[in-house]
Length: 264
Image (cartoon, rainbow, N blue to C red; front, side, top):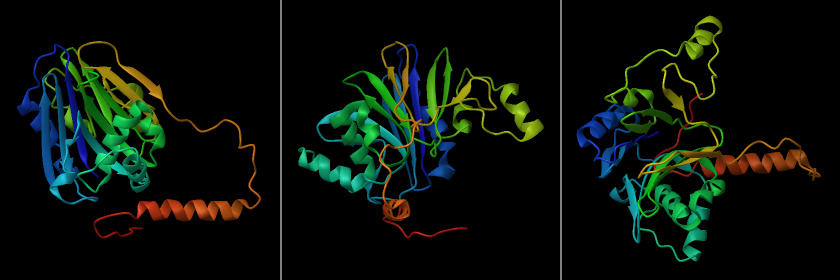
């Protein structure tokens, strides 16, 4: 569990570093190991790190990589990062770190927004690509990792938790009763993109988005959905296929540079 913050100023002016730092530090409980801040004109990225893979400084974020100006903040884990790293290395990419964050960033450099279709994992991330003048972000297929969005006249901000967005200068917190009332009356929690705070939304699961940093509307799309129809090819031994798939899922989730434990 890490914490990310991303800011885009609407007027094109420089990000207030003190504001970005204050928002990021509201997530200190998500990442006690390190803090990083990146400011580039109207774009700001903040990160609180909980080190799981590549405990060295080369795994720090906001993450950059040689030969490309893009910058990444990323919460989560790309379980198939070793396989992707091998594929990217065969295509000529070189790595200075041993973790999954640089693999994610170089996947974007190689495959663009289609990179998310290749990931097996759980993630919420934002990439600043100054060459294309965009922010590109995504959330994993089932929304395991959180990402919230707030847009006001002064700009747009994203964060792993709402509490960081509450520091946004021209946002006045107000209850969204259309989301809060069903919870209070019936215990209903799933309100889709709605949150209990008016104006703050969840970025939907299985979603990617691009936002021009020099003005323009956000483009958002779903990159994955559960198929409506069952697979045409029925396996001869479904139980064996399930066992193999389940064992593989557990195996890749145990990749870690720190001790692993299970809590029931």
